[in-house]
Length: 97
Image (tube, rainbow, N blue to C red; front, side, top):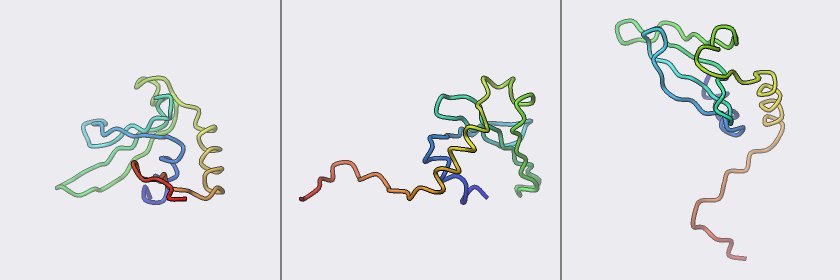
């Protein structure tokens, strides 16, 4: 799931930070302004992921910090899907033209 969505999120400057969620491993996803977009928690039993839980409801994640406008992020993701991705040029590489 993340393999499909995460590259698009990176293109629109969404970041994530590993974080413990309800005693389990997880992550907090933030928009380019540092506002909370959503959280993801993993239910782990005997070292194996049993369930992946995502929470985007602003009423449930508002205690973490200011909440992002998920609708605006969704629109940006849809625009990013339609635009071809041009990877950044490696640092120090010059155009030989």
